[in-house]
Image 1 (cartoon, rainbow, N blue to C red):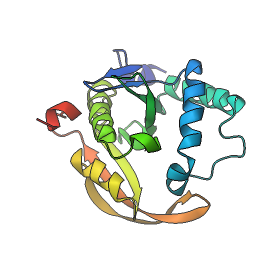
Image 2: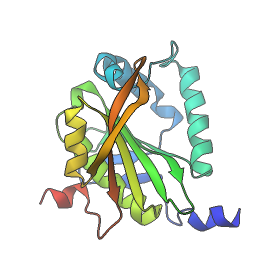
Image 3: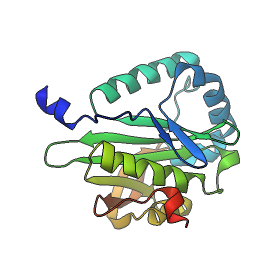
Length: 202
């Protein structure tokens, strides 16, 4: 366990504060707002996500998610965050660093989702811009990867704005909404300073 302790962050990483958004790890009290947002955004989200379970939005399933989140954070496997709008306090989406690999890799995968009423406003650009300094400077990762379906142009723009580079095509990479889908592979390296979302917009 000494090695695990050596790569765990020393500073608080439960909340990441930005000028317009706050990233915070999910809590039990977030369930009603999360379930309402996901339900309202179902048609918007399901084309880009694995098939939802029949009880996907139930409180019991949410509790199971929280237990899995806590275990993954403790074991340095995954770091999930909900995205909140500072002006209103509203929960608007989520962003996660998952599949953390240490040792010689020091790599994680980036995933995110945005509620339908908040999409297209630049919020995800800021959220990704906020999580990258945490990933590189706090978690001390070297590489962040992301996989995007070939028709998800909005997500490609988010990644390219954040400095990700396209590296190739992975055939039948993930099972999305019941079908194996090809994905474009992107990556961002921890080379030089990582600007926040606000700094990139200056």
